[in-house]
Length: 226
Picture 1 (cartoon, one colour):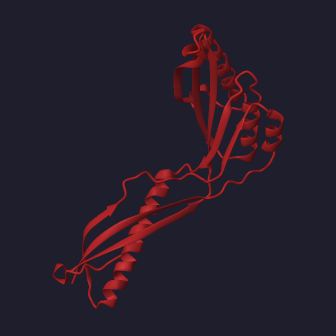
Picture 2: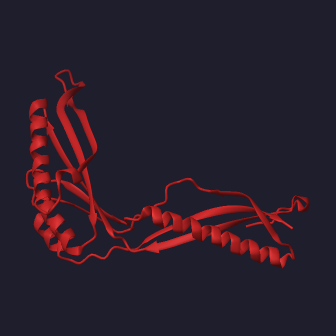
Picture 3: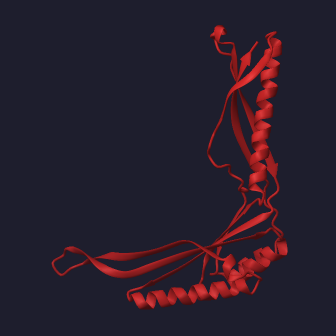
C-alpha cells in the first residue's frame, strides 16, 4: 500500500488482500485409456472395448453415461529408428496410438470414493491410469467472498492511513484486481493405475481426508482524500 507523493492529487491507493479456506466437498476423477496397434481398425476396436469396460464399471457404482465426459482425445502415428543393411538408420512405421481421457465429478463421500476406486481398478482390459483431485462445489460463492474480503481489507487499511494523516476518505476513483480464475483445488492428490489393483483396493479402504482449499487474491483501490 502507498500514499502518492503528489500531495496535490489528494488520492490514496491501497491494496487489500483476501484469503479463504474451505473443506473440499467435491471429487474430480480423470481416467485415461490408451491403445496401440499397427492396424487402425483393430486400434479403434480395442479402444472402444476398453472404454466400454470402464464406463460399465462406473455405471455399476451409480454413474449415468451422461455424467461421464470425454475431456481429451488424441490419435498419433508412431515411428521407430531401425538400422538398415547399409548401416544407416531409417524411420519405420511402428503403429498408431490412441488416448482417451474421461472425467466425472461427484460429492465427496469416503464410501463412494472407495467404491469408485474399486470400480476403476477392476478394469483389467482397460487398465486405466487415473487421477483424483478434490475441490469445492460453490466456486462462485467462494469467489464472491474472496473479493469481498479483499475490498474490506483495502477499506480498513485506507481508513487507518487517512485517520493517521488527519484526512478523510472520499469517493473511490478506481478498483482493479486480477482477472485470473481463482484456484479452488486441494493440494491433496491421488494417482494410480489398474495394474497392481490389490494394493490400491487396500489403499481405498483408508479414510482419506483431503487438505483444505486455500485461495488468495489482491484488490487495489484508489480513493479521493479530503
